[in-house]
Length: 312
Length: 312
Image 1 (cartoon, rainbow over the protein chains, first blue to last red):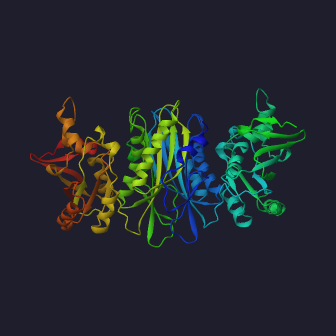
Image 2 (cartoon, one colour):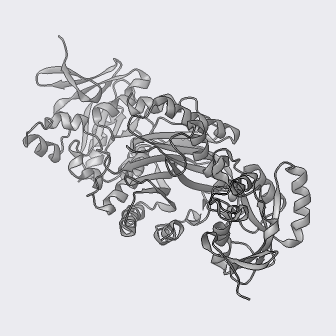
Image 3 (tube, one colour):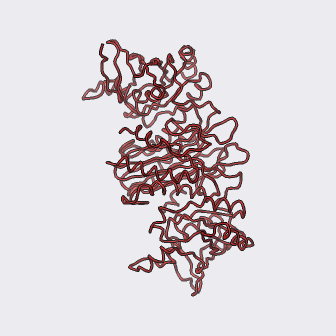
């Protein structure tokens, strides 16, 4: 069973109350705390040694990543982070200086995005380090952008470049908080998500609940330099396009927008964020499935990126 | 270095912002989110297989404990829980039915205290299960009860009975949310904490920051039946009094109150909570240190409960 399906199964029917506007299943939960003009976001996420980083990863970057992943989820809701809580699971024989460096990485990113670190717990996790972060954020009332809201005909956009993140960017990526807030204020995307499991997989979260599909344009997929270099190295590496479609941990924004606004968005984005690429990669359709249009025709993209040529 | 000191060291100087009323170092952080009559509480805590539970512990009780520890921290601030986030670290070969049972234990307790479970993540933690919970709560504005606020002459109270929690109560304890809310409304304790590391250690959190001390009355310490049974079994077991002073995971409320109110509190508590013991165990003094008055004189209680007879 895949993680997402397991979580979906488990979190269905859990206790809710009058404060909850949006429960588990989106990038963040949304709660109403009685502030007239705002709603609040809650999210938790963990990184584990040997899974999300290695014992060689500089500890500042481990701490940075642990917080950045959560901030990326706040960005995906077009929210703003307020405060974060940290739990460290520390292995046998850990060095206090390592812990200090992890916190220093967390703190440096927290300062940049004005996120207060309001709690820190440590516990023993004998075999490996684990860092769990929970974040509280806010968003203008009813202005959060969830995973549902795509409509047939909408254009699909992605920020930045995709693939090959494990070459390094997974430790240094920028949570797209500024970009997402600007998007929400100026263009109001229908649906938005941050890419953590790869474009091909995460796209489905915007489609499936509403029975929608998408046709992607192969040549429009923004392939990162890391994915190209990796592919060129050969030796069983994924082709660069496949890496861009299926590698995880891109932490870019994927969103839908009325196609009428597509050109205006492109122009405004280029002015506001000249150093960050924005790509219109396809169009939402009312027919379920993810299709990829390339020079040799249309292929269907399966879960986890396995690509078949479509039968004529 | 002890956990508390390490955390204190690490969380000192971390980024804060205008929303934060109380940062790391208390049972919960307190944030102001712009609601005129309320403030909000944030807390995170984790339980780990082999540390806080064993591979034999029924999974419903593991889930229950993971949430209950956080609710106990909300109680210690005289707050009310609103929502909780869960991260599961799952070992190799975990059974989905085990995860389901953990969630069922979390959910049953969440229902009882009307705490919405708004997020669930899973990650791999190959060698052992780990459950990290973060909770959001609220409290009437400026009504939270922190660890600071004890004054010389105050009476020191503890709910329930202490010691021997590992015999079973650590899995089934009641977070004292109802009792704490009632206390705050009717008696306004000066300082309050929940007992997680043992009375002798946790008491110091109420004393040290203000340079205070306490004299405890040995015969007033409420010793649990579990601690007595354990001590009677002999074979290197702690004496029952020492167990009550130093065993962890009691999750009872420890608080201070003006001694003028002590009798009124006792009477009112007995009426309101006839099944839960409340003990006045000593008195705050202006001289630092924890003294224990017994039949053979006054002893000083050291950190972690090591007891010396005081030199005459």
